[in-house]
Length: 103
Image (cartoon, rainbow, N blue to C red; front, side, top):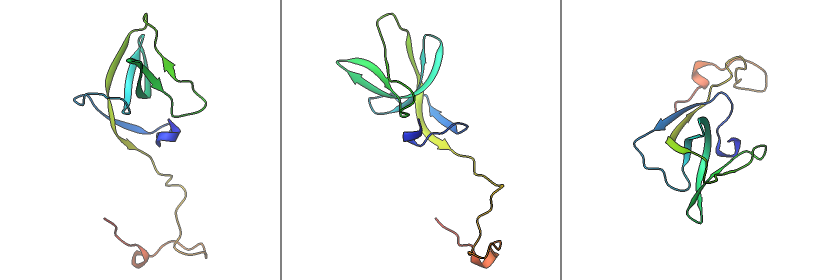
């Protein structure tokens, strides 16, 4: 799901109270296998779209069992704390006065 901003190791917040519609990123259970895909409808049938060119879309056949477990509402990324960002090109750690609070 890299084209949707979801990467390996990310944490997903999933809301089971949202009714899934075409375009939502969902956690789906297909024949007892979990997948995170974008929900689409083609001719009234669900298609689970991949947001990563390395993985195929999943067009479900009539014998498949599909459950939409929930809708992804937030993605949390871990930052790389081993690589500090420096305030200048001199490779010095940022001083407290260099840091700005954003909202």
